Image 1 (cartoon, helix red, strand yellow):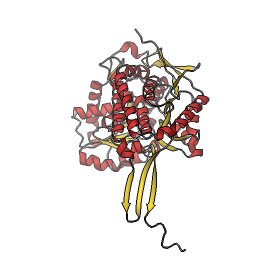
Image 2: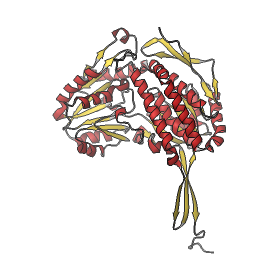
Image 3: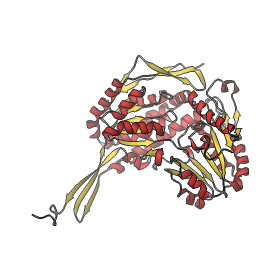
Image 4: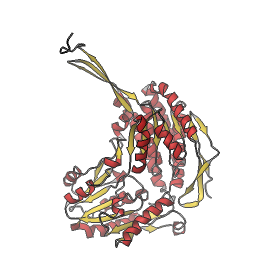
Amino acid sequence: MADKPITVHAIINGERVSTEKQYSRENPTNPEEIVGYAPVNTKEEAISAIDAAHNAFKEWSNSSIDDRVERMKRAVQKIKDATPEISRLLSREHGKPLYDAEGEFAVSIMWMEYACSIVKDVIKDQVQEHDHGKTIITFDSVGVVSAIIPWNYPISLSTIKIAPALLTGNTMVLKPSPFAPLAVSKVIDIISSEFPPGVLNLVHGEADVGVELTSNPKVAKIAFTGGTKTAKSIMKSAADTLKNMTLELGGNDVAIVLPEFDVNDSRAMRRMVISNFLTAGQICMIAKRIYVHRSIYNSFVEKYVEAANKWIRIGDPFNPDVTIGPVNNKNQVNYVQSLIDDAASKGAEVIKLGKILNPEIFETGYFMQPTLVLGAEHHDPIVVEEQFGPTVPILPFDDENDVIKLHNQGIYGLTSSVWGEEEHAIRVARQIEAGTTMINTAAVQGLDVRFPFGGVKQSGVGREYGEEGLKSYVEMHVINIPKHLELPYIPE
């Protein structure tokens, strides 16, 4: 028996707000099934949410750290209690297998608890006594934060912003993606209920809502995760008021496999496969292209296919044996397929991977069988563009300096990975232009919420996670008390 559709609301100044106009979210496994409905808020409602956040800011920014932490801890406990129910909802609306949805909640909770544990030390006053007098450095709240999140990891990409923003005394208006609006709305409802009205607001809607959130003069900071193209529009929208920004954007993350890599290491090869195809490849930090030293290329491909066929099991996200569910939406299916077709038309070999466990639903949903692409050229779209789906090209290289140069000449630099003997891999990693480089692992397998995450070049601005993730939501304020109030070289 199918679950009944649910309806979620906007949250403005502590009140749940319904709208006459709504949009539906289908189940990617079975697009004829409606999972739920979300409101289509207006520009005016977005303004009301921003005003509520603005009005709540003064009192909230003056609240004690202890109060903020206790409220966040209560919210975290409620999210833990609701995880079994909401992770199921996330799986239904998104398409990711249930284990993957539960994993997203686990990472989100881990970050929120860590942020609670360090915020006091991170933003406490720094007082220095010195020869010239005394200096106090304080960390002041920024103001109203607009958060705009994508559909691929809606829970973690919301909480990565909510926790540091609220803990450091800011208020927020958050807008989720229409491709995954339901589970995240439930989570934000839980968090919002633990905070004073106006501190955390939620709006849904179309482009006019997004424009208001990025241009309204009462918004002090924008926290955005999504595509580079959209980020450029956001920067233009925010230019008139020079807003503070954290932008975590796309990438074309490279995996470099060095000649000493042991292709017979089945666990390492499994990590490689997972780094390409977890969440059906719909992760910003996934390894999207693999460069393998020519001396081990043939044996690597052989063992890779073997590992992929063992791990990849496609089907119903609620089947416990399934590792990969459907792609989130039809447009993404069409885009990824166009890259595969383009490569095949130019002579590349396309190898289908894994096993379809539920053939009866495979043809009805937004499913794609993961593919390996061999023989593509370095300039082909499937190599130079972010696929954001279940396909990956493998290319040989002869000289590591050439492949490093090939990567660094691109416009992106989010994450990367190097596979081989540790010291050799580190030497290569130091030369790669990226925000994060992982050694002998990649994607979420190498993520640590205690350390900063973000991209360079057109993969982003600023950092999330770690102490830097908290400091990105405060402004440094220097208070100087000079010992000598008059400078000797200024005449009387």
